[in-house]
Length: 323
Image (cartoon, rainbow, N blue to C red; front, side, top):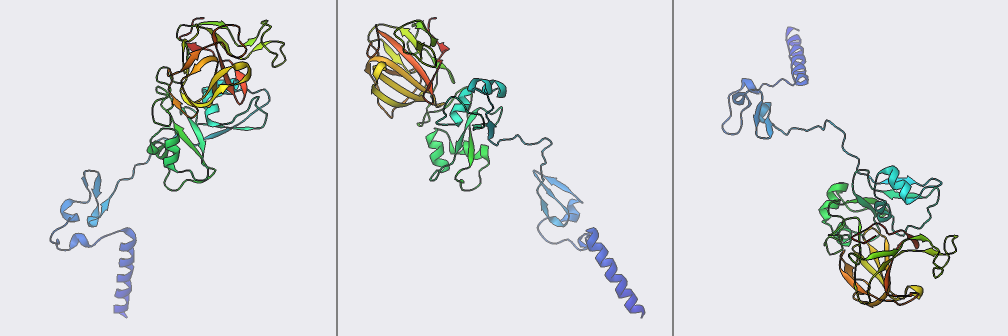
């Protein structure tokens, strides 16, 4: 009877010791080799690990004191009256980040449509993963290091078709061409004057110049800007991108189209000759041809037109032009 009571009491003490985390190792003889909790004390700090009791190694867990920044792409729902400029102003981002993130964007915007937007305060653009895309192919297409995309989006496995990824860009450098070369080395995110020092003789918008066709409800409308220059003057790319069209095209005469790194289409018209070809990646400042007077033109000059989804936009300001 008394023995049963002692056994029961011992079991209770043993269970209590296990629950409390009590260890008997401190009362045993030290073992040869290894770490010894008793010799080290109750807690020893060594480098970036802690040696706890019973010689176990405990890695410290760092808990952030502030929430991690949101790196997820955003979807903006267009409201009635919204324009690219008004959305960019409200969100405090360059409108080029909107066109960049929404290839094939058509204007005018329609109420209710969704626009992909990079995280606010994160310069860059959004890409949608398509069938066959890999981290390497996406990085190659945009001339960036695959680890930049992987690290920013915290990618730990295979890409999911239809998912959205953010490609961050250093605003001081701007985007890269597919070769990895900086697209706009002279003025990241802006347009350079394609003929340095040239005078702008006609601006974008309604005009009284009868040669101009009607457009957007106006009897005469100039859909770009005109730069005065002599026949054969070199024409440089206002921004870096890919040459997407070359040849004669109606009133434009001989023209070159460049889809720049932000998805904007630049049209250089009335040229006398061309120094590039479709599919060529050109840097900002690269010569693409010479001034002429082909097409609907009454004298030697360059017509520069900027389009988004086939709709002409004002290409000004141009850095280096004479106004």
